[in-house]
Image 1 (spheres, one colour):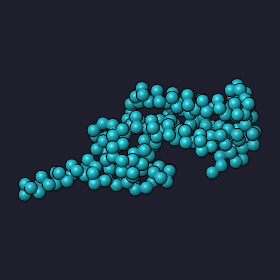
Image 2 (image 1 turned 135 degrees about the horizontal axis):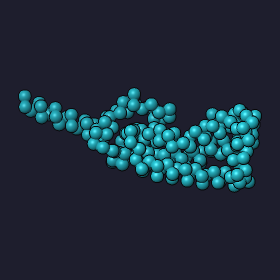
Image 3 (image 1 turned 60 degrees about the vertical axis):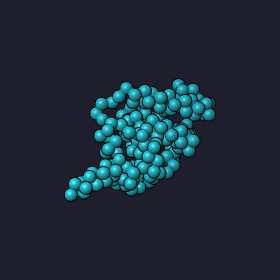
Length: 189
């Protein structure tokens, strides 16, 4: 889907195309997947989350500087153009796009995205059978045990890759514990 379609303002249209570029997308997808293991859906947000968020912002700012250089604009000129568009509401599609970008830069949106990316990374590891890499995604013991098996209800990603069914592998901790307990129980009979 071309998000720049219908945007009349040439600067915002170029900005949308820049963000949609596969190189831009890959940079941030890799960043999210690499850092998502730190995020857990606890009520308490750890200081580490803010550090990762600040790293994300710095990385995004670097990309923004690259975009501004390509367009021959200063940061102030770009901000001024965007503010004028938002104020006069002349280009509805440009306003919608800018609203989406601004909303996605909030810490809350970032945190929610990191939780989604954590589940996606876990699903990817489960599918590929790379249990040794799973260690980097484990949290508390309870979380480890609950993550050993993931069912279809838990993988609610929009990404079709993450929608695939995931089952316990024969080598998962839960499966081994169950088999061991069953063998012990059968021996006692």
